[in-house]
Length: 415
Image (cartoon, rainbow, N blue to C red; front, side, top):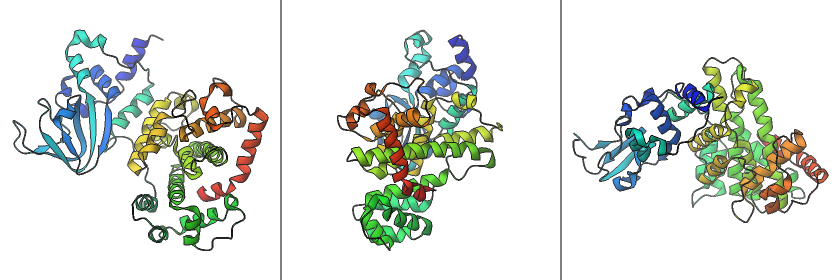
C-alpha cells in the first residue's frame, strides 16, 4: 500500500474541529493539525502550581479544563485570566508568570513544529512519525485528545473507597486505625482483605479474625495495592451487554499476567508482589474505554481484525490516561506507558517492567502456545535480571502450574 495515500486516508478521519477557535493553530490545514496532534502532550496540573513564560517557549499551551490566572495582565488582555481553550498560554511574548487556580488539563503543541508548518519549505525537514492508522484508530486518537472536554473517550470510574485508601496510605501520618475506618465503608473489600491475609500466602500463621489484624499482617503498602487491584477489577464488571464477552476475555488475560507477575515477584525478587499484581491487572486497561468508544459509535461487534487495527501505542496512551484520572502513582503510569518491551534493560536490578515482560512471555509461550514473533528466552534481559535465564520450558511450565495453584487467594480477592 502506498504510505502517502494511506496517511491521507486516516488524517481526514481525525476530528480537529475543537481546534477551530484555538489561536494561532486554527489557521492550519487539516493535515498540519493532525501532525501537531500526533506530537502533542497532555499534562494534568494541580491547583497552586506556578507556570513561567520562559519555560513554555517550546510549546503552544492551551487549557482544556480548569482555570489559570496571570500574575500580571498580559499586554492586550482586559483582565488577568489566562487559560482559555482559545488562547495559547503566554503566546507570543512568553513573559511573566501564571498560577493554576483549580486543577487544570493542559494540551501542549510543539511550537517549533508549528513554526515549520508556517514555513512550507521547511516542512520536509521536520521529523514526524509516519504511522499508518486505521479509521477506528484515528477516531480513538481524536477521542483521546478531546478527553476532559466532554466530547471524547469516557474513562470508567472506580470505587471511591479505594481512592480514599490510596490517598490516606500515602500520607505521613497514615495508620491502620485510620485506614480501617475508611475500609469499613466497603464490607466486601474488608472481607476480601481478611480472606487474603488468611490465605495460603501466609500459611502457618494464626488466622486474622479482624480487619485490623489482617492489615497489620499485610502492611499498609500491601493493603493499598490490594484495595486498588480490587477497585480496578470492578471496572471489568461494568460493560454493556454488547461488551461482556470481550471484556471478560480481557479480564482473564489480565488476570493471568497479574498472577504470573505476582508469583515471579514473590519467588525470585524482593519486589512487592501485590504491586506486581496491580501492574499486571492494569497493563491493558485502556482497551475498556476503547471498547466502549467503538460500541457507542455504531459498531455492534468488536472482531479481531478491528482490534488488530488498534496499535499497542494507542492502548498504552489511553491506559495511562485512565491511571492518571484514577490517581495512580507516577511509577505505575510510567511502567504501563513503556508497555511490554522484550528488549528493555533498564536498571541493573529487576523491576516491575521486567516482571511484566517475563509474565507476558510465559503466558504467550506456555499458556497460549504462541511463538510467532516471540523472541527466544536468552534474548530477553528480564530473564537474566531475575536469574531464571537457564530454566527449561519444562521448568517454566512447572512454575506456571504452581502459580495457578498457589494464587487462588488472588482470584478470591478480585472476583
